Image (cartoon, rainbow, N blue to C red; front, side, top):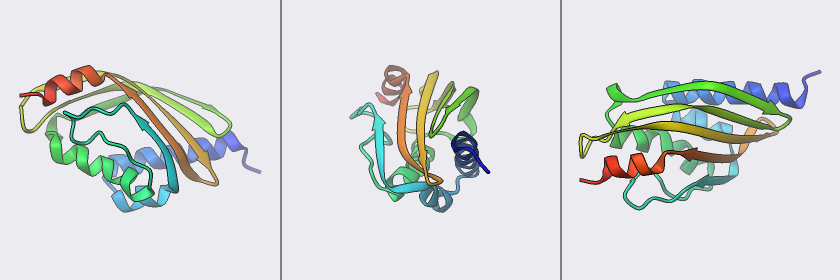
Amino acid sequence: MTTTAEATRSTVQKFLELRLAGDTEGLAGLFADEVDWVLAENPVVPWIRPRSTAAECAAQADELARYTVPEDARASIDTILVDGADAVLMGHVAGTVRATGKSFSGPFALRLTVEDGRITRHYLYENSLSIAAACTP
């Protein structure tokens, strides 16, 4: 019998695989129909906006790729903590904004909640100041 924590870890692993592969359709199937999405709004960053549906949440990866230089995108995960239905991923992200040529980098923490094999909560905490500065001409 699979524990809740094992099921959560498995879904998080699938999320990471789909995200790395750029599989928007797969991601849309992994997010719940309605998602509690939190990412500090930042009007100068085009890929950061409110989202709530599976399709909107899955599209965030495509939008990030459209506005940044793919060859410069870097992300590393240092820690994955799982407690029941909740997981927290901590690491570092860096990239270059296509329109300005400016780079950004910094730590991040991502809290995911998984229910019935689908992601119902996605809270991302990142260095929004660095990202906003990179988006500003």
